[in-house]
Amino acid sequence: MAGRLSFTVGFLIVASVGLLHGACAATTYTVGDDLGWTVQPNSSYYEEWASQKTFQIGDSFVFNWTTGTHTATEVSTREEYDNCTKMGKILVDAGVTVTFNANGTHYFLCSEGTHCEQGQKMVIKIGDGIAPSFAAPSLAAAAALSALFFSTVAIFFLN
Image (tube, rainbow, N blue to C red; front, side, top):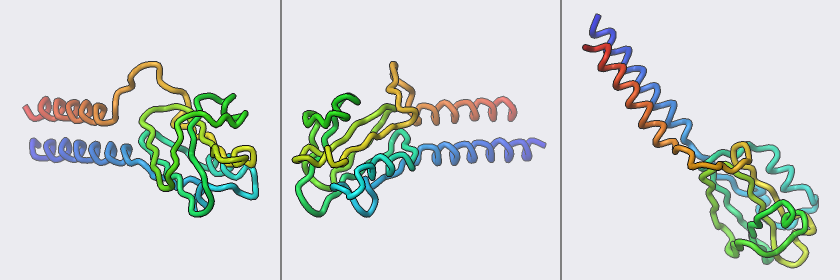
């Protein structure tokens, strides 16, 4: 009986760790996929590209361009985004990777010439798009608590 119980508890611990590892897996997106970050013929291209995906905490975004001069400029508000305000955090090198570690909405545009006005801009919503008003616990902390819980349960049943 004790051997069977030990096996069951051990299996639950291994399965829990495996599930938590899968939950932590982040995705790296190349903005615009194969077309990259450039002025597209369809001015809603990036809006459509982003709307077809679900972005999560820990995901990364690579801004690539192979032709022309571009930037990936992060502006602070929807108003700045809508008005193509060209002041903000400016990434000037192609291949730059941006990773988001909290829920929130991020606004990116190209600050070169009229690229933004031509549609080279996009909104990235991480999770529910609402920035946390408190420091949310990390997945590592959740994994540690889960392991502690299952270890406690195992010790309880094995004694």
